[in-house]
Length: 117
Length: 114
Image (cartoon, rainbow over all chains, first blue to last red; front, side, top):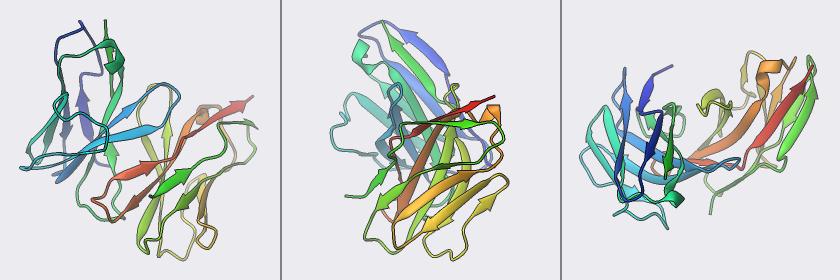
């Protein structure tokens, strides 16, 4: 299957600082990328959908000023957690789809475990 | 709103036996896709199997098969000949014509006993 690379895999940051997470599709062009958040033993909750060259679409309840998403190219999307606080500690995972049709598998990155201290 | 329901928070199965993980979905869309993913403790999401709403045959991928009952809106995952390495979280997900995003169920934690 296609490869999606997510970095970093783990990050610890101080409260009040910002953290950037990268999601790259290595061998295909991803017109759409998705960012999910997952708390321990819980499901993946969609945070936002990013389309190359346009503004991200955020799910209800997700603060777009806090979770900045940029999809500058067909192979790279970034999620920046601004002014992070301990409650932002979570597992963040991205996925990419080559085309937006129901039958297309979504490929996932390895995930980023963020700890804010 | 579209919803995916997995009613089994945890399941145990003896090694080499088969196990069925339940999944039901709720939609009025005619075109949709159903997915199963495995998530080991490392966190990565591993794609297992896909079923399209128009597919008449149940999907199979090696030891995985999807028991698709459209009228009941269920898409259960069957794992045959369970292995110790199958111990993980399993998520059912659906994709509708709403930008291609996946909606996930709550997950089922499968433990395979030797």
